[in-house]
Figure 1 (tube, one colour):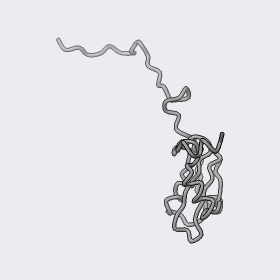
Figure 2 (cartoon, helix red, strand yellow):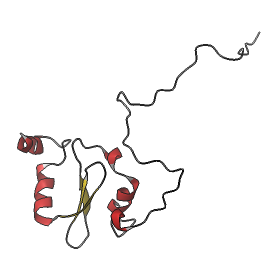
Figure 3 (spheres, helix red, strand yellow):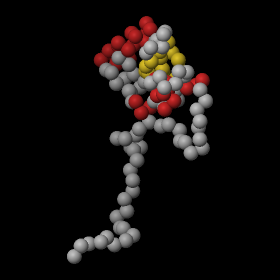
Figure 4 (cartoon, helix red, strand yellow):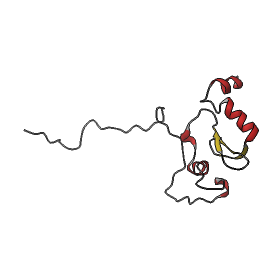
Length: 117
């Protein structure tokens, strides 16, 4: 069943072409907390990610995003990032799900709105 998901869908991890490229040219360089695996070719001219499950770019942490776009040369597990006390851990975008942010609107306002006469 996994084989058919690779051939016929692009939203489940990887396509057949990416599978072949990874098999022939890719070498694993790391994995993030979401289970996404990061690869590069032998001469480091190409870098890519294979998602764990559904393809969702919001699951890529900022450190790995920097590595993918060649902002940093070494993988994030080898670099010490400044994690300040006010920084939150990265989490995926929950828009469109039950966990999405929904602000609470008060039905009564604590003031009276101005109305033109």
